[in-house]
Length: 409
Image (cartoon, rainbow, N blue to C red; front, top):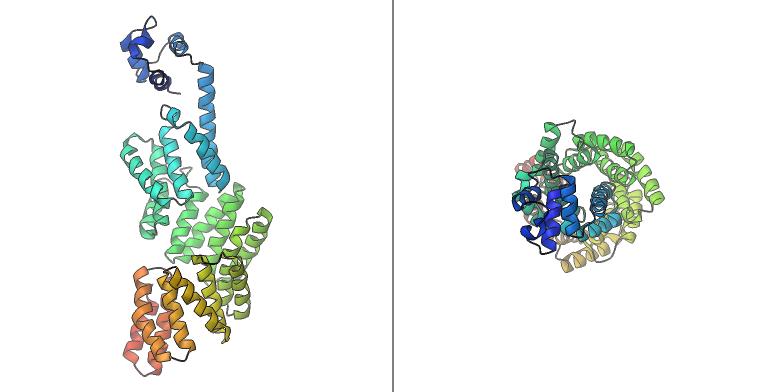
């Protein structure tokens, strides 16, 4: 506890000058040194100064213990993904924000606030808070500097800057692999970045490390998140049985923990796995399960609707047209260009306008998918469709162009 800082806090709060507080107890220069933590004060002197301020030192010490406990619980709630509890701890800490400023926990708490804004995905507040923290970084301890760099890595992930996030997080791991922060959280976020960059093998490697550490901590929600990440990357890597095993454990644990809000995403991902395995009927079953759990009129609802439409199309079902029409209407309403473009393409193909459809794919969808730089698998799929189309037409030079695009990673 920085007694001097707290003394200054309570003195200014009482609107007393140093002269008024020091009178009859100690000299003004002596009080100034105490307040600036430049001198280890005599306990009797400190007691007299606090008594003049009508402050009980025992109460102050209890407040410090409470703040320390709250800060510890605050970060633990985020690490264990306990959203409601983390929010409650934040409110309680903010009530003590003024006092925290005069304690040794000032930067640690501000760093945890940064993590909290990222935790609740309030990027505007996170951006502003990072700017403030950046100006204070010269005052950080080694541990606080590590936290700042780590949280910035998470920030980059949420902004979709995956290459920069990868470099930031791997540098932290490289700098000191024995650091206690080389934990499940760090490995999880590295795995998340690797998966986003379509490095499935590496994502699986780091995901397994994260899973082991979360299991050791009995961090059940993070176990579910990591199993999901592993399942997705096993699917991309073509390791289907491992992916199925992950989903089996995920569904069981989600139901046990009553984390049912995750089920739409789980069923959508399981539908994708079945699609990759060529099991289109089963794929449709899971996609529809996920769709029925989504909130209509949201982006996630459009995505689920699109996957169901694709399944019907793969099954040559007449249902496909109605679903793609719904996708088009909703994506236009929400100004979602990607699913507008994709639904238009499929509607051309369903209506027998193959030439128009492939021209639309070539001139609109392929450039758009390249520009957004995400979900490269879709770009590869549509490039393959175009290469096959031009082969059929005998236009082999153009077909090769799209074969080469399909092969680029």
